[in-house]
Length: 176
Image 1 (cartoon, helix red, strand yellow):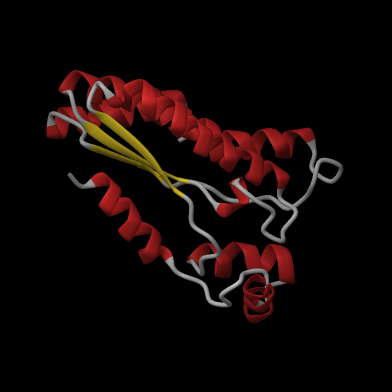
Image 2 (cartoon, rainbow, N blue to C red):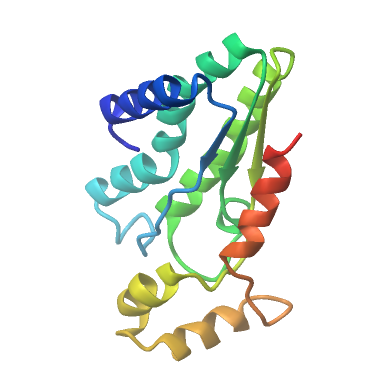
């Protein structure tokens, strides 16, 4: 999703196969820990590319299709990291997810009268396979339970949702 040509080819393949595109869900993202001092410029740029530019690229190619149809729904998945401190220093991820939220606000208003709805789901702490496979290794040397305890301690209601919670919100926003 960070490769413009690959996204354009995917959009063309969808149009060829289905004749239209009714729903786009931008659900890509992964954090890199660190603040502005710890992150390298390359890590910063990689965070923006994966977590924000990917949304721009997919929308750039899908919105014209939806606009021509007079309808479509785009659902972006951001994070509470984009609206507040969540207990983890991950400034690149947080800045990018804040950008996703504002991107949807601006583009959503621009295309609303053209029948294209753009919304953003802003999930909090979720226990997903990414947590077990990537974040636990990155943050706690692979100790999943220790990471889960740390994450739960940062939230008012000490339990985490899972991917189905986000999927159900996205499904609602994509539906008529």
